[in-house]
Structures are given as structure tokens and as C-alpha cells.
Length: 167
Image (cartoon, rainbow, N blue to C red; front, side, top):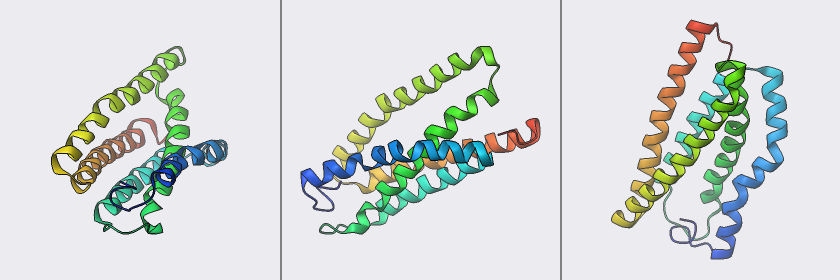
């Protein structure tokens, strides 16, 4: 998208593609400390879910342009969200399962993440190839994140009702 839609060079696009991961490397220890200090893990997850939706709606509606910096905003949001999800999601496991099942839960979470990569990446590529652009790709991502947000909200309500808001 950075090369085709926003006319950045391949080299620059490669660097920007690593930006969210670089943010994770730098910010994850601080995000973990923050999560441990304030708790409110589900509130933070809901915030990230909303910003994920915003990230893809922004990309969907952002017009083609020639190397405009505003096209980089979604990569910044992705870096923040990836950082927080990594810390919060894995940090919630001990609150959700019995101690003797933590390893299984971590394994299942990683398995689900890898499964999503195996299924979603080719599906998104198929949508892009069929439509020839990024609009429907972003519609697909937005739809997935809306569904994800609904599930997160359900978990939040469940936690509030059944467990007194431990997450």
C-alpha cells in the first residue's frame, strides 16, 4: 500500500513496515509496567480495539497521495496497538485460567495468532487481487476488528458480572 497507493519508494516502505515492530521492542516493557500498575486490562483492550477500527477506517478513507506523511498514521497506531495487545493479552492469561493450565492457554493463544496469520493473510491478498485496490481490503480489516471489538466488549461485561472486574 505504501508503494502503490502512497508512492513511497520500496526501501522507505520496507523501513516503515518495520516501524510497528520497532515500537513494540521499545515500548513493551513500559506498557507492561503500566498495565501492572493501573490494571484495567479490559478497558485498555477495548481502547486498542477502538483504535484498531480507527486505524483501518483511516486507511480506507485516506486518498491516494504522493509520499504524504499522513499516510503513516496507521503504522503508528498499529505499533501502539501491537505493543499493548502483546503485553495485555498474555498478561491476562493467569487471571482467566487455573495455574496448571497457563502453558496450555499461552500455547492456544499463540496457535490462534498463527492460525489467523495463515488464514487472514491469503484472504486479504485474494481480496486485493480481485478488487485491484485497498478499499475493500480495509473494509475487510475493519469488519474483522469490529467483530473483535464486540467479542472484547462481551468479555469485559462477562468479567464485570461474573468476576467483579478482575481483568
